[in-house]
Length: 339
Length: 246
Image 1 (cartoon, each protein chain N blue to C red):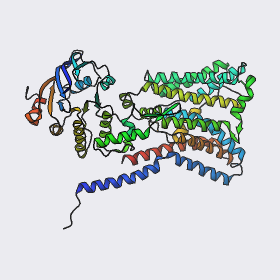
Image 2: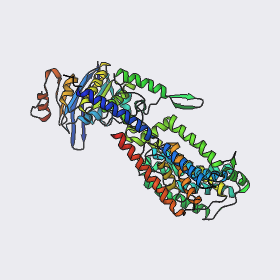
Image 3: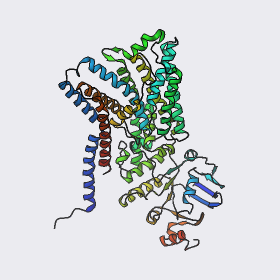
Image 4: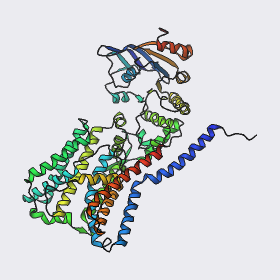
């Protein structure tokens, strides 16, 4: 009589096979950024064939510069989302920062004085957000929703709701940084690459980065292991606000004028880019590449609708579709790995 | 050698006496099974030893030195570690990152300090080796079995060379197959000279592993005896109150 395999051994084998298939699938599904990147490349290829204009150097220059702004803010948003929070005031911080920069330069001060004050104001907003969230344990959604209103209102008060388009002695420097290019690459894109590498480095290689991921996954565990959770949280919101602040300064230089509706509703595009790139709104996961690729995909969609002559009213539908698709993707992945 | 001694430790929350003068001794390398019904005072006692609560009265001695434990960090500094029932792990991090969470090893590159993943993985692998666990340092905790997760949480206590490890229901939330694995991990801890306080509802765990059984009922120690001198039936009686004292 053939010796029947002991049940335990069969179970082990089944488990091993299961684990291996799971690993492959997980590896495949794990990199959402890869898929989004492929989607963006595919869309770009189709557009290059379907239109004469998409692949033109001028259009590519515009596309990359346009998504750089959303991408820059998305870097900060990614860190916030990894920590398990959300930051709705980034669009208003972009406006506040640009306005402070504009007012200071308009008053005759140099670019760097303006930049220090603009980033200082942004950092203050981030600190207040973080302090309320970390120390008073208020939900980040509510705190930053309130700040969305406050920061924009401050920009209106500061500027008396005027448009500012004269930037004093350093005007050319401001315009060069925001609107210029080097070797054919728009300066905001260079800023995005530089700050993207910095963010990726901080997340991957520093204790701070590990702690941000830990807090997002299991805050209680982070507290019990002695991590200074409140300070890490505050730093996360300050980081996000400074990224928005940098974006504000660059946008001021690109647009050549600052109005109080700058960055309006930008937080939605930024959250969309971050989520499409694979960040989980429940916290604990997200990547810099994902955020940048997500921002790129949104801009390509927008650009393609214009080039193909489709009404821009469809833009929201397409972006919304990709947000839902991205989250569905994430759920699918979670289901697979929990099996 | 006695590593931990409690003298008449009591704790009241307002009018409620959660603990009424508990005295207890634990020696190096000894495993104590702490048993009792819900509300008997087990978790209050453990929280006092772990520094989460201050005792209302009574004294705590660690290696014959009286200590006051203000918070969990104080307890850790005094060589006491706790393995929580939910293990307090981060699913999205590797086993090694969880072991070193909050105590990451870093190295200097010019003016900046970066995580030394190689060193952390190496040390974590050593710790898992000592525990005879097959847990791999680079694996994500999300992908691990209950037994492997427990190994990660226990390895964390070895990092600080704790003398006393408190384990809160380590086998409550895992499959029967993995219970044996976890009990072996606890044996390894004991073999390394660690005193273990094992809080458990499971008689087989306590009788298979502990040197002594301590039974709490309504905030009092109603039995403190070697496992050889008692039986699951007697302990059950003590827990429920069918047997007054033993």
